[in-house]
Length: 428
Image: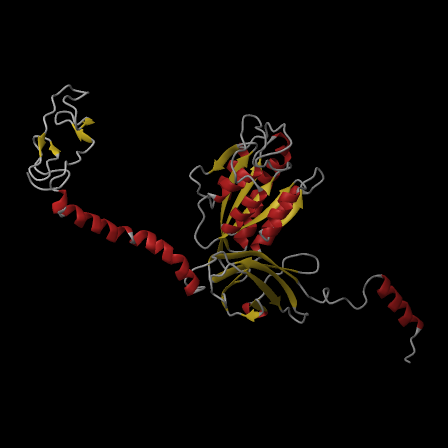
């Protein structure tokens, strides 16, 4: 055994106490990897937005395409699109803001930090657009009213400056309606979409009693509907909100993040952190190795290799939404399609047959020639077209006398000006 001097032993003890000994794998450079968003709107082409952080939770920039490996359901995929932290790409961000009386400090905080927030995006070459939806129990404002977003941080700051924290004496606000309104903004095609929800109150739900004259009779005011709407529009939600299970679920299921908003929360610090996080994300595109429309859950694993550090892995999943079509199972799709084709196609030959039948005069069997014909029960007045009984002598509406004559072939009553018999169809 090697012998140590007193000085060596002393230094070893000092290093150990100060934490200067051998670092763990994470301190050596391994990362935490998470999916910020899975965009399937152009399926089977999938777009991922990936967060990579170091041991301190800070975003890691400067990674290259070759340092990422992606698998879907265990099958390796080829990366067809990659944008690193220094590459230009688009991002549309909507602040969904509770402006009731208790939110005065948060309104001021966003006003003070929005310029720095936008500058972080600009510094990382993000082509950003900003939008704003203000709400309480009702939707209080949409900026711009046209639904367009702005690329001017000063204009956005001007919108925030017009907000006033008023009202809201109740315990809940209409968060789901505000998220629905934000989903109707005009987003650019193929852009990353992010909502930042800011509120200190839990949400109203479908069926709640009216509050301040606002009714909650929209079936979309549920966490299930709100989650589905955000996922359908490929939106990532960052929730800076009261500690409510609905908000936690919305953030989790859209691959966002949840921050509890309390009186002691460093609100401006959170906004600053979000700007850094969004600016440092990686965009990775690939084509699904199983491009069938089958409505199944697809598991994604992202592996990142650091410089001289252990590989790091994170992941998520998405659900392919299309349940059945020709690409998934031709026989099943055909079986479902046949009833529709029958419903559409059968009336055509039937109508053609009816048309042909109507154009041919009926043939009266000899045995029926001597029988008394059955007159139609209703005819129309020749003057006012009022329906009247065939045996009537006068019209009940206009009083015109009704004269009838008999068909020379079947002896059915006929109007004086009729050229064809309505019973046998023969010319007079």
